[in-house]
Length: 183
Image (cartoon, rainbow, N blue to C red; front, side):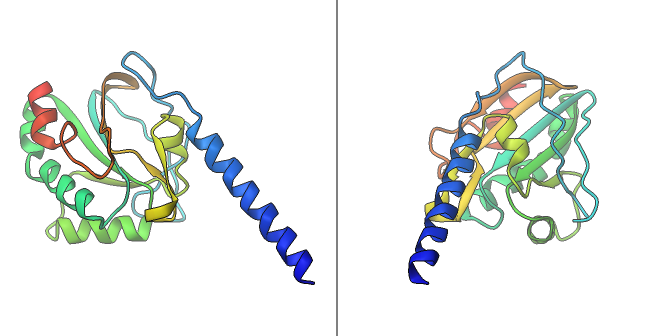
């Protein structure tokens, strides 16, 4: 019996590793690319996935995880500077995290108790960030694949700029004021 359990555990681990490897193998999105908008995400209801359909200029902020220290210091900059982004022609700001919709909603409420027009998007299976080639294996610290720390500036479905932190635990080029200066 223990031999069977051992083989089963080994097979599960190998399958999980293969899936993580496949997620990480995607080419990273670049300026001029089209956003891969076929992957479903969630915002307010776990039972109502949808695909993003950006119009005009949009900012997509990818963060490794809700409630993590660096992510929780990064997101407020986008909330606080929302009107400045709008003044520079940005239609919407999307903060995308690889968490379930309940955690993502709780994080938004924690960061913006009086609400915010910034959209907090749950990519619960990391499929959207994987299709962007912006996923990292964060199994050791966060339990599985997560988004790299990134910002994409897009016009409609066309990528204008991509900023990716070298270290997902640090915040520099994806900080809100840095992105505003670029626009």
